[in-house]
Image (cartoon, rainbow, N blue to C red; front, side, top):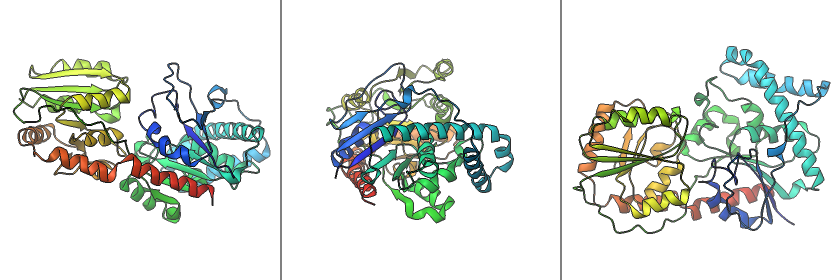
Length: 416
């Protein structure tokens, strides 16, 4: 019997959101299925179209759908009320929930619309649910839509749903309201919730102890890197190179990197890979940096180009001072090339950054202390550090190991 995988993404394979993650994962997942149907929710204006395995077919129908309000029936009103009551009872910010009730109703109407559109599509394709699994790469809108499909559209209650949960789609505190809506609908519908870090797994088991059997730990990973060029690794080079790699958004707190660099009297070149709405303000802030600090904003670069940079250049460390994280793939990429990490102790970061292989900063660190730690680190680097980091990557974040394990989780769900 043919095994089918329905994979739901933000914009992959056309956009940037998952371009650094999913190609590697699909390399191991796709061969275990006869066919993979890929559903991006958004079609970006600038389409990058990733290369895909031969058995992966992109279904862009939902990206072109204009969301319309479904006709309000007594049945739909009952379903919406049922979800709202369940979410309200489990919400830790009931006043905020009441104030947002109209927005939540609008969300549920949208989920109902897309769920029914998906049902129509599956019916038109004559899909047998017994031989397929639905996989949402994020525990967010797609999970809500498919949860609605499973709970409220006739004929889909036995649908098998697997969701990954990372950071923003996992931690309630990362949302202004202090909760994620509709989390109860999602968690009740999912058959397997896959967490990318121990921290995330512990967080969910703490908040949903009755759902522990649904949860599994399966880390993200990257492919074996190309061997590095022979570059100068000694500590008395005339200039040190540090990199950061992220969107230029508030949660990444890139302005704090500028505060730290202002206090270091070594010659440093800071290179940032990534773009975002805060680029202009960050450029302005960098104008105040002393002459010993050079800054380069590379903007968005293809993942392959970033890895080539690591291959051909000596990088002294990758810095990440985010307010919140899961476990960034950028850190996995760095340690695979023997590049140490300086990062804040948030989310699952402590699982990849240890004090003997980098610097783990307090979430609310002082720039003075961080600058002192970084200077000491640069001037006293362990000669075996690069080998130790690459070994740690091999043991914990190898794509062959981690994604093969995850692929088996998906296949097991098909057979449930």
